[in-house]
Image (cartoon, rainbow, N blue to C red):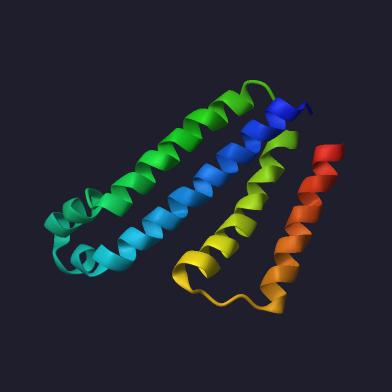
Length: 121
C-alpha cells in the first residue's frame, strides 16, 4: 500500500471518529428533547449544531471512504476502521472525561497491532 492511500484511509477513520464525538456531544446536550418531545424533539436534535456537524463530518468521511474503496482492496482497507476504536477512546478521555483503564488500553493496542499486520501484508 502506498503512503497516499494509507494517509487517506487514516483521514477517513479519523473523520469518522470526529463525527462520533460530535454526535455524542450533541446528544448529551439535546438528548432529553429527543426522548421527550417526539418528532419535534427529533427535528430539533437533528439540527442542533453538534449533531448536524457530526452528520456532516460523517458524510464527508463516507465520500472519502468511497475514494479509498475505488483504489484499495477491501480486505486491506477495512481493517483500518478498527483504528476508530483508538481515536474514540482518546476522544472520550480527552473531551468527555470518560475513564480509561488497562483493559481498554490493551484492547486498543491489540487493534492497532492488527492494523499494522494488515498494512504490512
